[in-house]
Length: 422
Ligand code: AMP
Image (cartoon, rainbow, N blue to C red; front, top):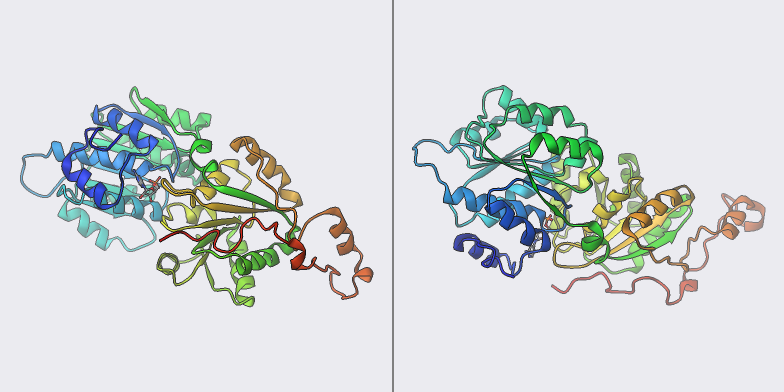
């Protein structure tokens, strides 16, 4: 199956060829014909499956085929709403890339920055608007955005949108959309609240389900380290020092935890940067830029901040903390198992996180292979040593990690394991 076979026009096929996309991914193969036929779509799929192109390509094609004859500034004919600015920027880049030869234009708006430049771009006129909900409503209220000519509406990452408390914004927005439109609704998970919301947006949608276990969990080489909470930072340093990798994202549950990891790594002489909601937009963009350029190889991220990070060469994900929502685990490891390449994901699990582990393994229907032999195990014997400082002979907590050489050849990944062929 090629993009040509799916009825994609030459100008878009040329742009896809420039990008080195030879074949559509499963979600693209299924969604593109539905969308080109004008149907609404309910997509159960997550980042990493090629979802963005699955909606951007057919929207661009329909916009290109149906250009208005009227003169004057372009009117917004497609709107994509997505929860984070990183995702919004990434989606806009995809529209730029795939629409390179179509002459269609887009702009992206999100909060946390001054609105002037965004208003200017809107005044010039665009075919496609990519937006986060808050700023979108704000600029609509101020009269800078008219959606009268809207023909295509995409709600992306709907479950994340609700998690982030955007439900009222979304409902307010839907009330202002013209009825005669094509609607697309994407969500990684489909709990009842999401199904209910989708009913408010979609007409009679066709459904496409790309299960996470078919896309990410199977493609990514996963391993698990049982480790006492207090030794996680040391284990991380040990792994970062002993493994070879091009780029790694380390996930922590909290912003505070992310900063703590950066400090621990700094002490060990490992350069890293954290991105999370407490950082300014500039600091986040800089950290991301340095990471993409390879100036720093280790990025520490919380889940929300990491949405939308699109790093082609990401070779390794480390879950410093296991997420309490099992789907988040799949999202995280999906950062490395991108549409065309596979990657590796290492997860730390302390005593309190075993319940999360159970839920994750149930969701992915796999047991994650355990690395037994590492210098900071969390077995009962070690716990015992920790509680008996007198027997340790070195004061403090009394913990003495097992010697590194004990791990022999059982390390999950040897040198170069996580390096991509460039
Ligand atoms: P997404 O799920 O939209 O975040 O896409 C994941 C990654 O896959 C992005 O880096 C895209 O550039 C890439 N991608 C999307 N579709 C294709 C394709 N058909 N062939 C190769 N790479 C693709």
